[in-house]
Structures are given as C-alpha cells and as structure tokens.
Image 1 (cartoon, helix red, strand yellow):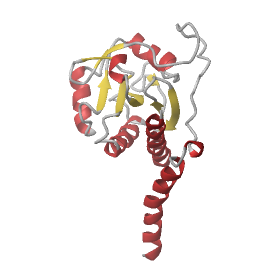
Image 2 (cartoon, one colour):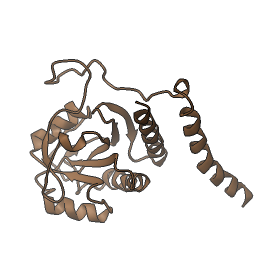
Image 3 (cartoon, helix red, strand yellow):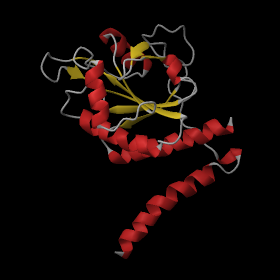
Length: 215
C-alpha cells in the first residue's frame, strides 16, 4: 500500500515540479519542436514555415467551422470515423481524457475530423460526440467534402490518410494526435492509442501554454 501511495504522489508531484523548473527564468525554458519550418513538399503554399491551411468544414451541430475557429487557440487534432472498430474508439476515449484535462481552459480546443464523410453526417457525428462526452465549444467533430478533408489531413496536418480497399474498414488513417500552436504550426505528434503517449501530449500542451505565456 505504501508503494502505491508513493507512486501516486510521484505522478502528481513530478509533472508540477518539471513545469515550475521549466518556467523559472527564460534560460530554463526549452520550447517544443516546430515541425516543417521550411514548409512541406507537394503543398499549395508558396514556401516558408508550414501552418494549417485555410479550410471550410461543418461541425457536429451543423455550424460552419473554418481555420478562423483555430485562430489564437492551441489545437489538439485527430482523424477518425464513427464506423471504425479498431483504433478510433481508443483514440476518442483518450481525447475524452484530454478534454477533461483542459476543460476549463478556453485557449485549448480539440478537433476530430471524419475520414468517412458520406456516412458520418452531422447527425451521426452529433451522436458520436454524445457517446464520448464531447462538450460543444471545447471538442469539435468535423465533416465536409471528402477531398477537402483528405487534403487537410495530408497537406495540413501532414498525416498519411487515403482510401482503403472498399471494405468496412475502407480507410487507411493515422493513429496520431497532432498538437498545433496558436500560430497554426505543428508542435507534436502522439500515438492516440497509447495512454502514456497521450500523457506526454497533455504535458507538452501545458508546456506549450507556458511558451505562449512567455511571448
């Protein structure tokens, strides 16, 4: 029993101590990696630092959702589909846990994009949101034209998403959750089916918040 309490204490205290140390003076803070500072290949951008490009989609309540909704927000994003019986349920369960960690912080939002937009209508995404406790305004589930969603996955979030073989699992999609800063830059990729990696996502999101506060 004593060992259990010691481990529990360490799990609570160590992250707090780490954040305090990293936030004590400018020289102690190490920013997260900025991915693709020179841009990416096969992109419509004119070069320079890669950011999430403009898009126009619809959320689980049927409201328009564009890149403007991400402005000034730290974004935690993934790509799923509601008929998926493999990695998606675990990813959404992990995002539910992430949502709880930042529930009262308006600077952080979660965004799940469907890769099965023909099936995942607004009504289906609304039901899925209820299933995982997605709170509207904090966690958005997005639909739109299939080519736009896949282009956003490949050239926006730089994930390998493409059509599959025509069966029930007709989607090759990523298990990665993506962390994006307030400027639209990608700052981290995390295995969304691994609770320890998701713990790292939560920690690095907090570090990104500290980085933003120091600007």
